[in-house]
Image (tube, rainbow, N blue to C red; front, side, top):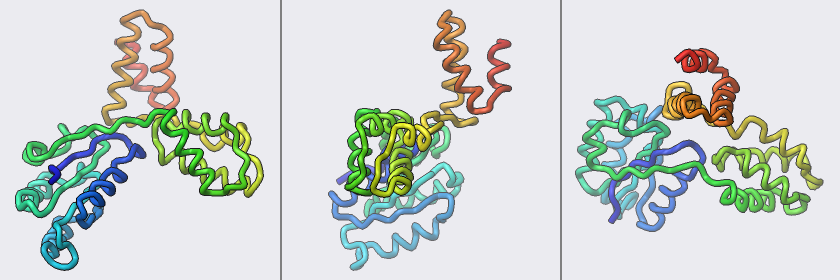
Length: 237
């Protein structure tokens, strides 16, 4: 028996993977929907399959990007959640307390997923290289660089490995190759989301606290993302 859940966190940190593991452990059929293209009729169709040979043990619905469901659509989810035969795992990259209807929140447990640390990404990078091409020659420096430059997004690290493995084709992957494949990938920035305001707050508090290194760090992140206006406003303040 598992509760309805909301997974909140950035991309590439394992939200979908954890939902798949839960579905396997509970022996429930997993239905994957994306709120950008799905509708309530899709969920109603799943509901009609409950108790049949298609979903004998109930269903687990993984609804990605739930913030794209409007209030009416989210309200319609309630009748399916409260039935008990459907367990909802919704994921979002936005703050659920702002974007998810309160009645849904009150019936769900919210879990926050955070960027994956470089020391945890590195074994995944090594495994990905060995699966992509066992004959590749890859140094520890290459794996460490990809792990540290993906910004905690494992999917980005896997994309870099795939690109490097295809380019090397049984040869050697150099650190220079890795630097080129992973450039700019470590920076996270969303112009309208929590990270945007966290960076702005970090800049302002660093200046107020007379911490020049931190202030330059946050300013550089704003400028690198191309957000000159926000940087200028905060500096004027």
